[in-house]
Image 1 (cartoon, rainbow, N blue to C red):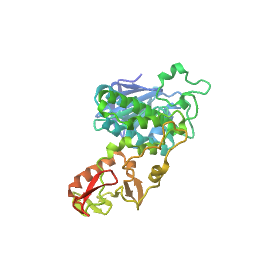
Image 2 (cartoon, one colour):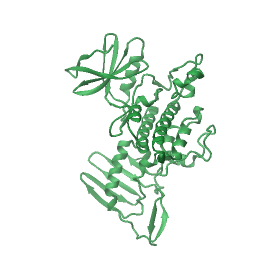
Image 3 (cartoon, helix red, strand yellow):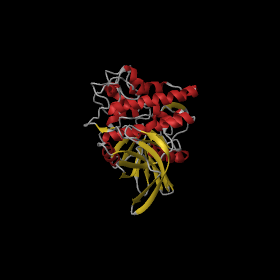
Length: 385
């Protein structure tokens, strides 16, 4: 039972937390909304077993803008509690209560792939990705929550046992779990990909039903790949990040290689365009953005994707190969290393977008229009010879 008020000493100060309403009920605990100047979500669960300690240890280790942040934890009356930052709406509630466009969905699901890519780097499988376990604020900032079933890939947690797999009659109770999880087999990072794909298909189906004009084949293609029954047939997280489904997010990019070089100072930001590179420098950062036409600076992962063809012989939907974003060759240099622009998190992408759109009016073509050609982004540009 959650107390109506919780008095705690936090950072050498006494705090009185007041319970508001229940936010959710998970596998191992309940979550309530509490307030004390700031709002927070507090998850409570029994101290029997290791579930509380394991989840707390894992959540405290993780640090990513698209993963829920732990504020503090405490124990009381044989129960363990974890306080998280508060988000009032889940993706499930947004899809049921509001009209959301497909572009917004792309922004949300790109952030979830960013989170999954980070988790893979930490060796963590979430194991419970669904609409109720994604929270979103009014600015479309999305965070993955509820790590009660999460595990490390080298210490897999079998939610169902091979001796007692989910029966065909009960599979509709757990539609977001991958086939290998339902069978009680060892899961992998691509088990989360299946759940991500199931969630996207459901979310997009509702939107496309309301707005049939939004339909395009990219939705079907990316979902069909993510929902491959065979784990080895599914694309990896970094392959999905480059899928054309997300191209709308990158439409602010343009081929700037054939524009005049310029130097601009905007506030405390110095911007210089030299050939195929735009250099941005502020008080605390230096970054170079390379046009997609620049082949001198390359990233091996992008080159592999562009030349890969069919990503898996086991894939049942690949015919001519996994499709790749037309913006895949755009890249940035940070700390002397080259990275694909697609690996930028959404907050960083928005920052780059704002600056590029802000300075684009200053760009002047080197030559006047006369004939047309297709540039690296498939834009039509015109030049005199």
